[in-house]
Length: 387
Image (cartoon, rainbow, N blue to C red):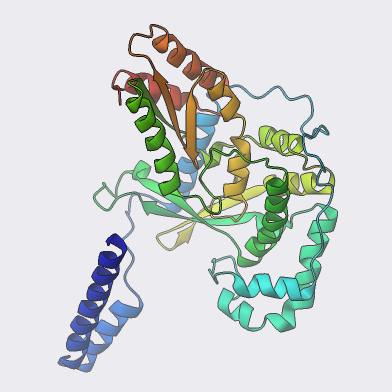
């Protein structure tokens, strides 16, 4: 019923907009008014930039925010950045090269999003792809076989976006960075994504309690999992406490050493591991704002936002959270960087407060979390009530 009502609502909105602009165009008093109407439809005006904030201001703010949060926890003590131990039955030692037909299929099936760094529009690239296929296939296969991600693909163009329309546009912390990457770079990422995802699925390496970025999983399945567990506990006359954790900013503060070590422990070794190391290092971004572009800022941490691999890599990065949570007797479910911890217990259990404090203390000392989170948890813990 909800889907039917939503579809009906969308259709009526579309019909109302069509009727409105049809009437407006037919009743245009002059050519100037007519072209002004067409221009508003085809090129909607962007929100006026705040004069006092420049592109370099945004770039510096985004960089400093990540650096400040990352500096609040100690560096991991990893003997080797790339380890050779593996828990997989058959480690992934190499990538499989693609044929021109396979590259063409991937290229044409991708949504043609265009980045300012692209030399030509993506839809045009798809249209002339038969001519470019030999070169594109060579670039992709050379990257896969040598374990090197092209340097030209490591740049990103960032656009600041106001988090909510009602926020003050003059405050720089009210904006979030939206990262745009070259279309060809994302095609190469898609090749690696498909092969790594297949390997992880065959070895059951991903966290079963992570609903983000997985086929057949969604916010709905995550919500059903948590609410059903709480409902069962209530039916058994047990109390429950629910703690909501949020990493900030999660994707930008991913530690590369930990991520590479985790990839190695999952069985991704040899050329694939070197490829990921090349993919993560040497990245940079520029901010576009108010008709200007900032200086380049280098990225020492994080996975690329707006990328094909970023979501999968973040899921891999957080796989070690599960054992930490379960060691304290908590259940959990994740969706991307949002984690729901829940504990069901007898109402007269005197150990609950200590177990909660112990679990959050372990979160505080693990390099995967941020000190900012601990402050949020401490402030919100007194507000938690029995479900």
